[in-house]
Image 1 (tube, one colour):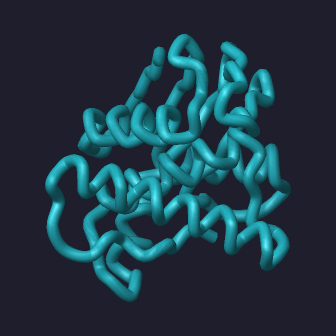
Image 2 (cartoon, rainbow, N blue to C red):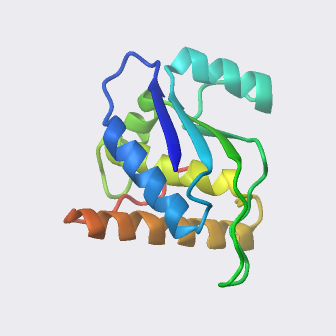
Length: 165
């Protein structure tokens, strides 16, 4: 799996955990091991600009996903996953920090960025949360992936509650 993490935000973030949780999520979703993903960490101003340009919405947001080859997880166990470019995930640590502090189970900016990374991966794979049934599926899968990764890494304590809008 080729995953690049590029921090352009000026904020110190745990790039290793972003890379690691992305790799775990893609493996868990059975994405071809030669597929490529880019994660870019930007400041509030850059995220706001992207949010306006692509979503026509004001203000910065927490995560945006830009799919490339529209890869999807294999449906059948014996199905070979296609290889390709997943796309880009853009994260905003300033928004992540505020969301982590306001969450029912308060957590760090880095824990929120881990959650947002998984959220972004799922969006790249075609998951969405516009409808209640879609939201239940996506957030359930997101929680299972984050919990599985945290358990594998030996983290203790409650997992971050979904704060993604």
